[in-house]
Image (tube, rainbow, N blue to C red; front, side, top):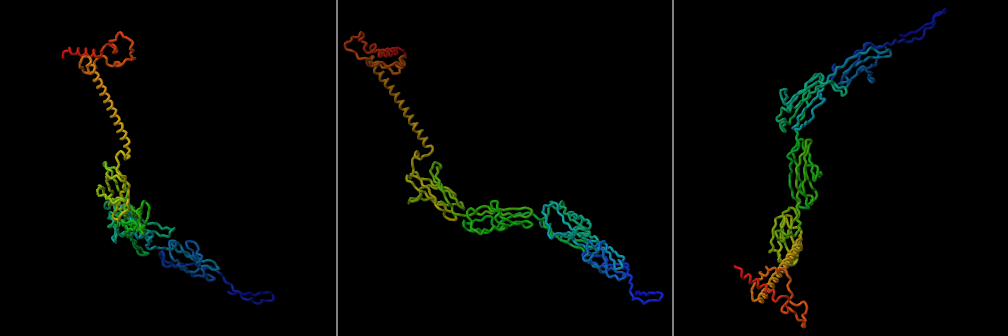
Length: 524
């Protein structure tokens, strides 16, 4: 109230002072708090209301809030809305009023928060597995407070525990403050590959839609996640729109398109001689090709499981070029004309250069790859032979060779010719020597026979065989001289004048005569 004062002394009371008010401050009374909704729902809001019956003096108009025991500095009103509610909202909330007289008693509540089913880990829109994989599984994780259960479906049909091709494992996981996730149900669908035919997946039948579905809880309805499960396999049956094409030199070839069966769908690239030349399924050449561009082009189809390739052959057709060589085949002098072109099969035509003569009399042979012309040995003049090859593209440039006229074999200049000539000369010389020796021997024998015949006549006409004389022991003696060693002087008279023929008179003839006479007495 208002207070004033008066003073008093012996003289009496003094004047009354002006009134001054006196105000007694005191803190607000006890606070009470309510919130709506009573059970908070994750991702939604909750509103807290703080009230006091005795607002104190002066009347309290400001409030202080605490969350988990920590002051909330920016809220001073009696009402506070928390939006959104999360895992960190599952704690204590306190409030009290305060004024200049002090702080009132706080009210405290612990907020209960529920979480409707929501995916922490949902299925991917697409899930693939290699057909021969032995370990395949699908997993779902659903946040839900209160707890919920998870069921699995294949193409809308529930997967029962009795289905031996699958088995399911489940657990309820604790909340994770680091991520703000509440408690969650975790379920894994395992493929029991040992129960599948041949232990592998069927590429068509087993490609299906799989779903995991949670049950409802008090906070909200259940949730569903679906994935298309595809049975995957590496590329196979790679094929080409044209496996082999032929194009003339200087022209642009048609495009070649590569295709292959695979899942996921394959990508493509083209290589030549180990180098990548095109990325994509189509081999498109926008420039003219030369003969060096002929060869094998490889299309490679690939995905994450492997690759498969096939080859395309591009054949560049061009006019043939020819060459001529001269050889000896089966003891015949021939000219061989070979052609190099595409296609290799060629036709050949022979002719003579600078001459009107034809080659109809010459024998020709060969096949589609070479032509053989047999030379005529009667031709003695030099000739220039011309060969022209042609194929389906056209006629190629002519090739020619000069051939000298026919010469004797010993003039051909072969490697063996000098040796043959030397051997022939040596044989001829040997024959001449043998003939000379034979002639000398015959002449010597004839001389002896003539000499024996003359001496036998001198001895009395005895006829002896020359061979008889050969058996006498005078073989090898020197023939006596037929004239004096010195000229005979006319004034000398010799005692053996009757032996002036160099020995006894007719000594040799007498000896032959006696031999013949002796043999005549020998009985036959």
